[in-house]
Amino acid sequence: MKIGHFYDAVELHREEKIVYAKFLKPHRTLSTCRLNGGMREDLEYVYNHQSCEPRAHIGTDLCHVAVKEPERYQRRIAGKAGLDFEKCASLGTAANVNNAAVSVEKFEDLEVVAIVTAGVGGNGGRAGDPASYYQSEDGAVIINKAPPQAGTINMILLISEEVTKGALVSAATVLCEAKSSILQELMAPSRYSEGIASGTGTDQIGIACRLGTKIVHTDANKHSKLGELIGKVGRKALQEALNLQSGLTPDARRSSVAQLARFGETQEAFIEGIKSLLDPEAAALFEANFLSANHDPVSVAAVQALVHLKDQFTWGVLPFGCIQEIMTGQAALLASCVAGKEISRSQLQEKLGMEAISLDSGDFLTLVRKCYALGYGMKWQGRFED
Image 1 (tube, one colour):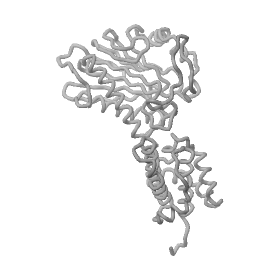
Image 2 (cartoon, rainbow, N blue to C red):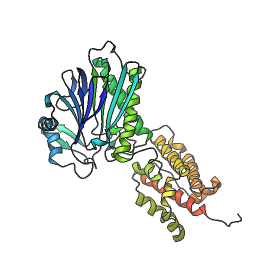
Image 3 (cartoon, rainbow, N blue to C red):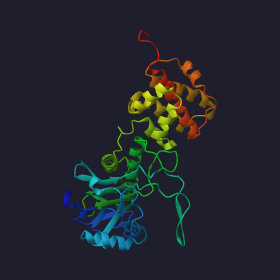
Image 4 (spheres, helix red, strand yellow):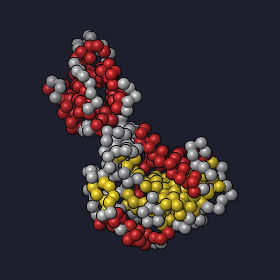
């Protein structure tokens, strides 16, 4: 079924588990396609195909063929959709293509379109994270754990005017920066380190520009209007796709547990860790009202500040010699925020009884739980007259 038509030169179609752009006029393409990838001027389609479900489904025959026999895979998938596989650049995903997000930006006669599917929760990674495998003469050799779940951000970009080959590569860098900027704003966690994800290990792109137009763009960097439009459509489509596929939105990230997840925190461990530091009555009250405590904006802001400070020490921006004063002061503020009332900073620091602060993630999570327990334990203390 045709679901879109852009700048009189591209149609967008969706059939079952595939969404594809059909070129009505010649286009130059740049893609990560394993079979017809790189820079091409003889393709007629760019498609994105769902080959499996995001969870507990990666080991299917279709996934195996997609990785081991890309030509057989592309011939089969393209053929089912009535496409010539030799004229296709393909992207593969576990995301539902019904959740593909489309964004369009225009400036004068220039039109830029992004079609994005996105999943990052199970396979988010940060550039420089430990690798999962290396390639040898005998094929891939596993050296670390395989991805815990599927997760891929696939971005198709369509440009209504010709872009030179070099500028098309610049367009790819801007598109990738747009992706990373959204993940940074969401503080999406890497699953392979304690860092913020900059993408996933299986991200793919397909960029196409119309050939033979009056205007030929020689650059697509962020200073150019073309680069601006690429950044805008990439960001907007990715935001929508993350929401549609997995509900990953700014609101969903307003959660202390979510902000602590990249250090190994879970909801169950968070609740039990705090309950263990409270008397039975307060522990039961906290568990019954966990959602409110976890999503309280003031408390989440204090947790985010602690997380950011930990990052700043890890990255070397703040000197480790000042960690005690800085982290204990912020920890006291978190306890006060959870309590919902003004409490002397020195009083809270004394009650927390913190010894030497470290950057160890386990110690950090223990510190946050202690702050929550101290604040929640003091939240309803005192008489009505007080």
